[in-house]
Length: 525
Image (cartoon, rainbow, N blue to C red):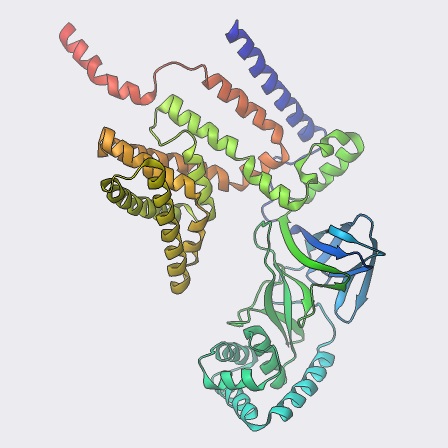
């Protein structure tokens, strides 16, 4: 009877999942395979603040359509606020106003970005460079005159050296970027101390020197459209006018940036958000790549013919939640892999789903780097745990001591990675502290009770189980299917339920019992 109930449940789950899946694919045209070369992005800004009970005016900088991006489908969520979009000398801004705001409030801005031109290094955004150059030159002249000779001598020396070591305008800018980034140079120190406020930053300093040399340049703040992220940092770079076009470049090396990935938001130090009548301001940006225009068309058809599809689609959620679910929806697939490895193959491991958690940590580093860091931390933790065992500590204090040591190990790796320029070391901090601590404890107990061979076998099994989990968590095709067709997880549930009734031999048991079978044949013969 129970078996019949299970089979009915499994059939209902599979039929429901496949029914919704085929309807979305055949009737609405949802794509099964993502377009990995898509140049369409969704950007979202979240502004949180607390009002003082006074009238509130908040101005948020917005991206503009230019020669590289077309900004479409803009939308705002600002309950109780009047909204107006204006363009002034600092660029496009959304102005939110309310007669009185007491307490916390949140404003959302969302837009789709379509990359128009992917040519490297060109940008058509912004005002005419002549006007910028004239303004800056007069400003720099006034600053130089006020700060007298030492500044002039230092600037002239740096510009002359960059000119001597270059063969053209582009190489001159590269040399100037290299020289201006060297804060150990006494000339740069003189320029920082004697120049206008704000040029302690390398990007501002390069803009200052380029304009002094007669090359129109400007500072840009914006977002790099590289990977999906819930907390996209605001990056700074420079743009200089050369060959009749604006060129986006890294402020440290003057290496050209792809303007199809560098989205400008504000220029020349203009604030991202300003206004009055509020406090405790917080601004965050999220970016996510849209899979393809076919998906957008499918959602439009769903809105017209099957509103329930869009209402239950994860793609209608805010970007930060979408990015969370892009990971969460893959965890059940990792769990299925672990079930197969343990129930069918018989692979040993510490804990039930620890390999999935390890795979999540590897997702933040890389497979090879993550395995090295994980093995290193666990090995050192085992040695320290063995020493703590000699001190005859009780279980809970011992676990707390190991956790503290692991924290210090992560801190040391992060500092060492920063000092040596190896940024992958910083991602180790994303490992779950408790999981590593419990791994060390479980491995130590297994080592004492069952011997080192069994402990190493389970450790190797845990890492081996994390490898297919890592592949699933980082596969863009699987991620696309999971976020667009989450109903297919019902099939995963059905498979897990079926495997839960499996009581046959595991593959490793065939190997273990092979010796007995051979002995039985020999004695029978």
